[in-house]
Length: 184
Image 1 (cartoon, one colour):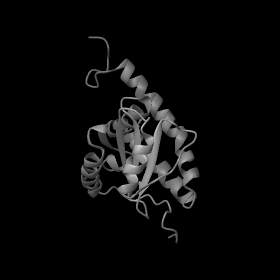
Image 2: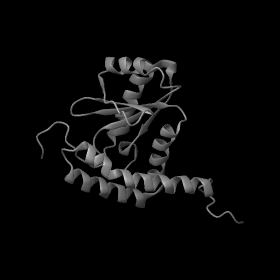
Image 3: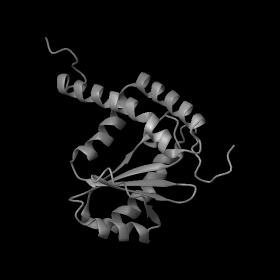
């Protein structure tokens, strides 16, 4: 075991994670009001049977990101800490708690950043083999980079990109999941 509160540890799936999301969703929905167009449970804790860091990822979709200062202040009042991402102006990222309990990703509603989180989650829900591959990768990376969150995230990037390519192709060529073959 490690001695830092922010160490990376992949745990077995916990059925309490969706319940924690629902409680925090109410808090966020009340705080954002009609500025939140959608609030979704994303990431590994949203996928039953997938091992994950015990941090509930929440996607908060807003009409635009032009009000970033408002969102920073609003989430700070709720105990969230912003981690600026200079290279990614398409989202605001926050964490709550130490050790971390929640990640909040504030994105523009119906943007590619919004959709990619949902598509990735849904693909894992629909493809158990891919889910197993992702879980193995996460465990290996967590063991290798327990104290290095950036390397852990970077280590997942190629796999996530590959899954996104598969998911987009599948939806383009087979939009109806119950009718895989385009021929009668």
